[in-house]
Image (tube, rainbow, N blue to C red; front, side, top):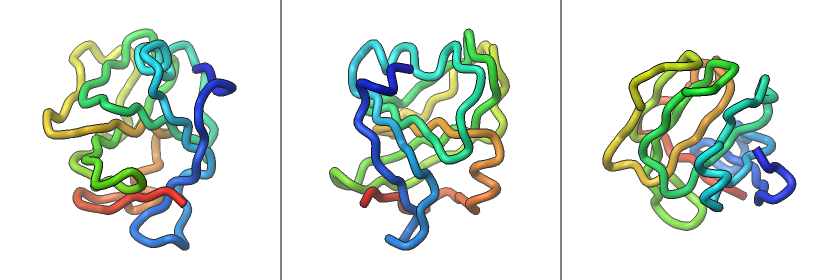
Length: 126
């Protein structure tokens, strides 16, 4: 992941007071979207990767399990959770997708449970 070339923002759940991702990296460039977190040994607990205009991912060449959220974009600063996938293992052969999703959020395993994320939750930036 080319962190130095990505925009970074904080991601919040349902209200402006509950920050759930301290450093959310935005993947907009085709290279960043293609490689995503491939080859990364770990993702820090306060980090996440939001892949813009992405409704399907795979886990090939991954080194760690992830929690995956497929999101519907409401406006420039907010999304609704359409589906969640917990503890998706590296090298999962079948792609994960949600055809109605606009963007995809990749975070550490345990993130969904820790933050009580549910289908329909609203997420927003600062």
